Image (cartoon, rainbow, N blue to C red; front, top):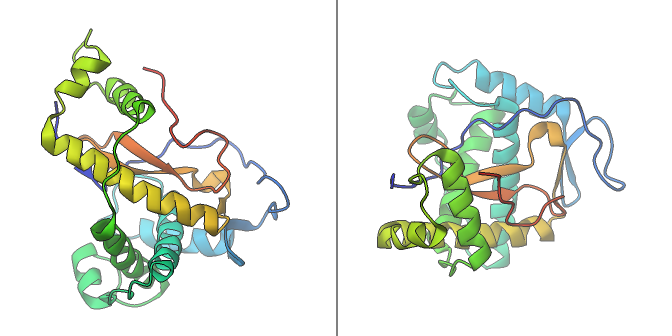
Length: 228
């Protein structure tokens, strides 16, 4: 089996049309709600346009990527505070040099803060024992990605994962648990045109194997199997 890869952000499937947000959070010009804060579509689109202009940015949907950074930054910051963990330092210049982003402006500030706070969450996450449903979800996603031998059963797939992949899987489930808690606490709502999930774990080809909903009230369950 291909070795799983942490943190990849594959291009998300495009959403056709603009869908209304549920409940009272349905202002057409708002992209993201987090606690009492709002991020307008104009603001997110502006940052996405800046990202698309960077030569290093080659694939994916810039708007959805920016939305993911905003949600994960704000939620990670909140969860570190809830857990009484000091916020890590944000390295603007170093992050700009490594990423190719401009050294000043809102985009590099967003990305550098996202990197710092998300990194702190990853370091402190407790690996979670996968449930049967989570193993099934991983199996179906691996099947869809073409990394499961034809005719292989879920039981055989689980036996063949190996200790390293099992540890990586459990660690990312632990990371997802922290974010799921934070997203619910913050009542996060994301306009569907900016995406509804983010990959936490991918294979070497960028296929999402562990995903997290960006909304506090997703339409689907926390584990949303894809058809094989």
